[in-house]
Amino acid sequence: MPRPFAAIAAVVIVICGLGVRTLWDGPVPKYAGDALYTALIYMLLVLLWPRIRPWAAGLASAALSWAIEFAQLASIPRWLHPLLGSTFNPPDLLWYAAGAAAAAVAHTLWMTRHTPRG
Image (cartoon, rainbow, N blue to C red):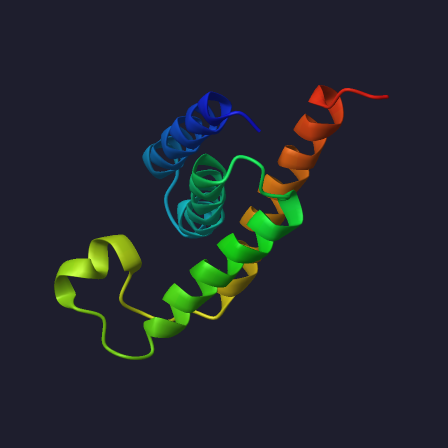
């Protein structure tokens, strides 16, 4: 996937996250934010390694999100709380996986449409 496309997708993901927080209250923005957070990590991985396979980016982004969530069981420095959170919440793990899966499906569909067939 070309870097400019991944960069644009990352910006759109951030805009969606801000929009969800603006439009809804309660669990919707929280869990949508979890999925979008992992999708953003996915796109950042694609920016770093444009030839990364969707399954690899999906696993890596979900694993990183899960690692951050499990790190909340220990003590995360207070100054990192806005970025990494502060409280372990098991349902977040499901939403991280959903975000990684959605990003991987979108990436796979993009590759299917933009890969030359021989």
